[in-house]
Length: 281
Image 1 (cartoon, rainbow, N blue to C red):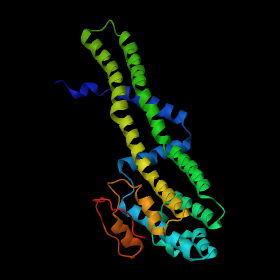
Image 2 (image 1 turned 30 degrees about the vertical axis):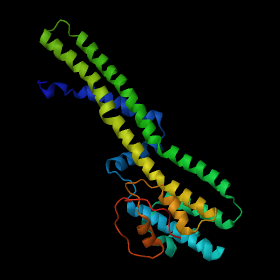
Image 3 (image 1 turned 180 degrees about the vertical axis):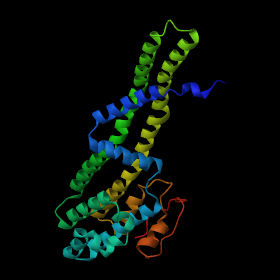
């Protein structure tokens, strides 16, 4: 196209647009959401999503707890749930222990299970409600950034109008000077559209994808516990959870079995090459 990139460097246009964007964002959202947006942005830029090690630790922990529930008394199991940081079961899976919200989720529902009075369909309904609440909370940064992205083109027009007003005060100047003022004003429109569709909206979408993948851990817990409550053996129950993992990070049945039943060392495994007919009990 030619031309000089320096002509689009109009600092005051960017100051106006970014200042209004930041102001509307802070006004429209509670401070907790503002802080969480910063956290979500870091997660999106670093692609902080669960890896296969995280899934293996989660499945291994669920298997160990289910086995304890089947073979031990209520008091023995409750001791692990009441103080996870001191439990030899939980400390064996550090990635789960470090995820405090997920840890509380697991402990809460195992506590309900060992009480023995809750029915599977009641637990399922309760889990669905809680997971929906968690996802809704985790998606607030996405929604708030999309609001900013949708408003940026209009804010760019506001900055452009201010530039045109300035240009109108220089109508008695030379065409060269007047053209510079009008060009600077149009940069506001360009910047608003560019920042909206080229930066903020893609960032918001990336945050949504990352947060959805992180929330998948709760669905794995839900499916595993429901299968266990309906009478499945621990190894079969965690197979229900394993199927909730995306193909790119899903460990094979052999790897999961190695880390749960056989107590083998951790293995780095690629995505599951092929599905087996069923899990080994």
